[in-house]
Structure formats: structure tokens, C-alpha cells
Image 1 (cartoon, rainbow, N blue to C red):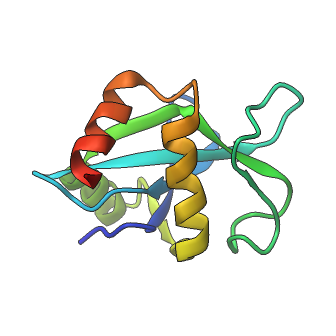
Image 2 (tube, rainbow, N blue to C red; image 1 turned 90 degrees about the horizontal axis):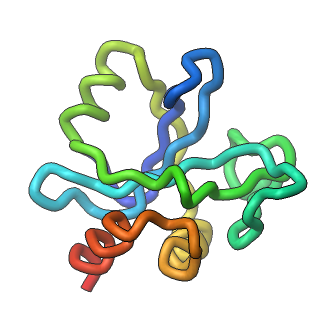
Length: 123
């Protein structure tokens, strides 16, 4: 069962590149909101920056890329974990989760549907 703060490594469009995905909502009607952690680049949105020590996976400056935020079926995530298409990692701390959640609301890049769903689940 997925919980808030759970993380998993999975590829998105580029099958060669794995990203850390973070579950930011509790399951609701079989769905959760996930956000993606990516390496910081010059033009990256720096609303939520993570560094070594924020999570065992983070080894260099990384950012939450809110433009990749998704509403996902929990069954799809659990199936990917069961088949090895995704790998479970350590959960983020409550403090990091709170920063990520605040950024989801504040980011201009969060898809409107994701923001609306997040607000309906977290009210």
C-alpha cells in the first residue's frame, strides 16, 4: 500500500533515465499525486531544491520538476514495483514532504488538473 512520502525509481519517457518519484497525497479512489526529482540545471525551477542529506538518493543539487507532476493509479505503481519496472526507495521525511507539497501549490508549472486534484484530496 502506498503512503504519503513514499518514493520509487522509474523511467518516464526516456527508458534509459531513472528519476525519483515521490507520492505526495494519500491514496484516494485508487489514485495518488506524484512529483519527480531531477538534476538541477541552469534553467530549472528552483522552488524546491534538494541536496545530499535530504534523501539517500540525492547526491547532488536536484529540484522537484512540477511540470512532470502526475495523477497516477496506485495499481499501476504497485504493478511496476512488483514487476521490477520501478524500484521502491526510502520515503522522504515529513519536513521534505511539507516543502514539496507547498511547492506543488506555488509552482506555475504544476498542471492545473494535478493542482485541482491535489486540493480536492488534501482539503
